[in-house]
Amino acid sequence: MTAPLRIGTRSSELALFQARQVASLLAAHGVESELVTYTTIGDRILDKPLSAIGEKGLFTAELEADLLTGKTDCAVHSLKDLPTADPAGLFLVALLEREDPRDAFVTRPGITATKLEELPEGAKVGTSSLRRRAQLRALRPDLEVCELRGNVGTRLRKIDEGQVDAALLAAAGLRRLGLGHRIVSLLNAPDWLGAPGQGCIAVQARVHDDAMVQVLQKLDHAATRLSVTAERSLLASLEGGCQVPIGAATLDEPKYGLMLHAIIASVDGETAVRGGLPIDLNDPAASGRELARQLHASGGAAILEELRANTPNVLKDAAK
Image (cartoon, rainbow, N blue to C red):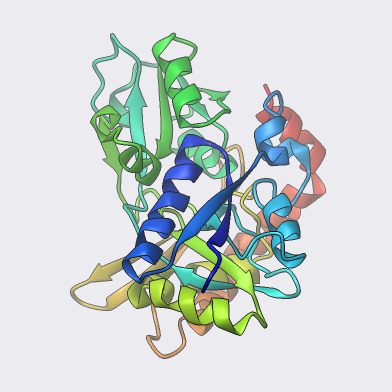
């Protein structure tokens, strides 16, 4: 390649870190690159819950549009932000080795609780995720769940200012930014489930750009692709986006090997369906579809139907 490879990325501190990680891996293969930065609709609208904006690809659409037209050569995303269906002409060419996929419990100064269960009654906990909100209300209905938007640094500042007593953030983002010391404790699967694909950096390319695909495929991590393929297949089968209360995690268990765990929950946390299934290493997507079918048949269909039927009320409640 004679010209630097153009990497599309959001302009947040975490997104830039992730894009630079891709650039570093490319450099190790002798490929020069440069970053092209974007501010997405999800970055611009900060006064509403993500679930109330009503858009798919809140953090990805602008990057994908320029990738399709050739203004960039690839795009780097947090996998959990990507819709499960690839836009026509694009695909996930590489999934980097996954960071810790768990959620982290973070507190403001003066809070002595070392885990979620120890927070005092009525404490304020911040999150912008319906999945986290649902699990919080199921575990601790006495807590006040507050909307907390912004990049990682902004959310930590709001915590430290006392706008909330604690918050739940992705452990991967904190660690990538050198903020692992802010993690008070981690919420472990299968009791608490993160977002499908959480902790994974995805590289997107054009389907027929053979030269670029050949370069970028060298960055793909096989074990990560296997686990997140199962998780995202489950999400796609349930027709859930990143703003639907669906959680998933892959665990390596002595008795069963790789297990896919998942939850579908109502936003108020009062109803939830859980399940688990060994992953077929030869067809992880089929395992995701099968667990989705089981959850759907066990009551998940009713939860999702009610959620969609009452979307305006759900979003109004989430904004309180």
